[in-house]
Length: 430
Ligand SMILES: [Zn+2]
Image (tube, rainbow, N blue to C red; front, top):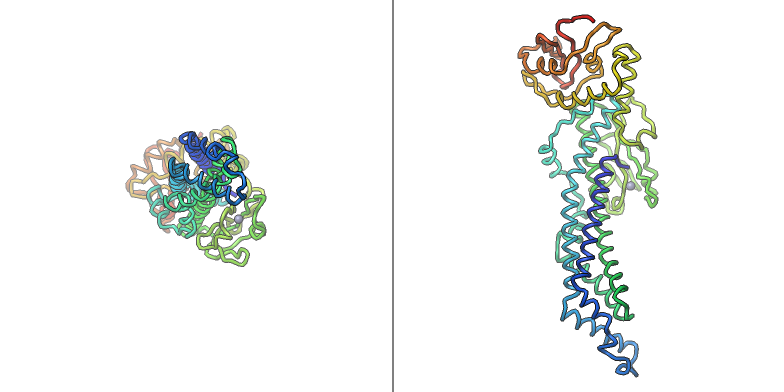
């Protein structure tokens, strides 16, 4: 069960694989139309009267010789196998290229997943693209995924041998039954279709594995760097032909460092590279987080990530408590969050602290409130305070650093990088 963005990436990959194999079929057939036509001419090479009195086995022998001669003169099978295995190599590389993007999406999604439950900003991811790439390259790989990629085309000889065998079988049948060009082309289409399905299967398995690996990385980071205590939960794919063991796993939770027991096998997460192929190939299951002490509903966990919905809950709470002016619309609220994410997250303060998030309280203070008689603060004043005050006032326990300029004061927890609150500096009441 994957999130919207991952599903989009999977669909896009499917679409490109279909293109690759569609083109391979068209090339294979159109480049060799004459040779394919010759396959239909057995009767011309061996008129029926020359075969009278021969047994079926003898006639089949003639048909095999006929196919071998065409192959020797035209390299029909050899050429088509080369085309199709080249397509496989392209497909295998595409799968490899896409997997980092899917990994990254899984990582980012996990932090959002935790953030939604913790009611914190989701923009606190710590690894940038390069750091993540370094981690991804060292992430465990499943041994059979490399084998699968080699069969697909990363190892050209292996791929060609498999495809040649398939073509040989199909074309022998075609000659044996004296089939038309249309029927022969359908057989070739069947062979490219088999390669296409191989590619789809490898792609699915690879993508969902790295998506879950990316998610696990985020969960572990939320635990290690932010001290957020959580369980991991197995979510079943709801596919029709799913493994019964995996259906039983739906909703089962475990500590992050523990393994699930799936059909008697220990697995850290769905598509665990250390698990057996039987428990992994074509699995569509996913991993999500469950914060300890937080309630969750099955409905939410199967739904799409709805960041805006979580923001909407915060917004309503703030309005109802009087801490946010009812004149602030939800759209205003959302655009403020987008502006914070863009302008504040990642910002480094004048004394070297990196901004990683902001509290609900901070958003309220940014807007101000009529009932609390507090005016709001301009975003550029906030940025200015954070980047120009070189000697912020640090609280006794070090949980708060207060940056002050003529326009605003802003408090930051230097230990977490979370913005706590802000005030207009002149404390002008409205
Ligand atoms: Zn599964």
